Amino acid sequence: MGHREDLLEGAKRCLLEKGYARTTARDIVAASGANLASIGYHYGSKDVLMRQALVETVAEWGEGFAATEEAGGTAAEGDPVARFAAMWDRILLRFQEQREFVTSQVEVLGLLPRDPELRAALASVLPEGGEGLVAVFEGVPDTAVDAEAARVVGSFYQALLTGLMVQSLITPGTVPSGGDLVEAMRRVLSGSVLGPRAERAEGEGGAAGEGGAGGEAGTDGAGTGAASGGGGTADS
Image (cartoon, rainbow, N blue to C red; front, side, top):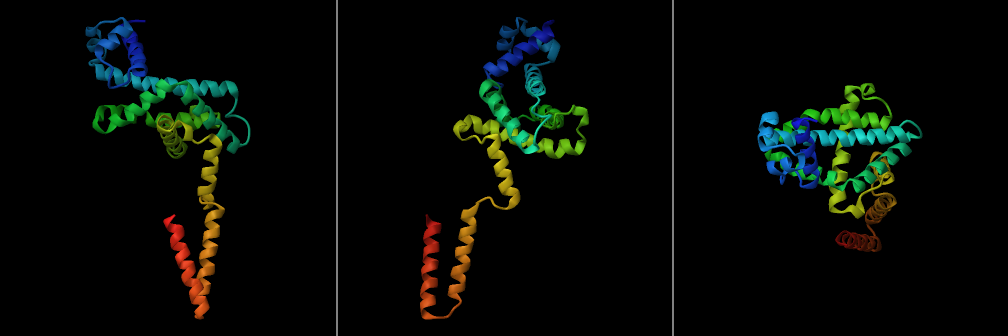
């Protein structure tokens, strides 16, 4: 490899080991065996080099996951719901195995609002990333993914991926499994997010309302009691 390639490899190592913001030009030189002048000659600045290192690191992570799935055959066979759950379980396992990668990605999220050039660099490859995720989940080549699927489903996968990365660092013990994600979507799409408990509460409210409409003294008392009980439930 020449100095350009050496610098890029060194920057990628620094990204994982030291983080995006903490990496200095001297760190990259030490990791690559190149010299300070070569950074300006080949990339213009350390920031340009680090942005390139970030983009390539993300691409390599995706390619590695795609290769694993191709070898395992998860995406090409089976029930789509079971496949969806299994794919996310594999991604979550990779989060555990590649902690440095996850940490570097979450760090960069916090830098985006104040770094327009970094934001532009990631925005330029975001659509390709969504397309790649759809291809991996469906077990097809990237060329088989149409633009609408990449925009809608790819963006959905990217949102899940980013959110799960953040959660895996903050509260790793509560990260949902692939099966949990399936169950969450089932509840949301069926309108049963709160499950049987919500149905019981609705039924109890209806019964109290009917009692309150009776006009009898005893019924009024029952209605008042139900209202008080409902308030207690809300407070708890």
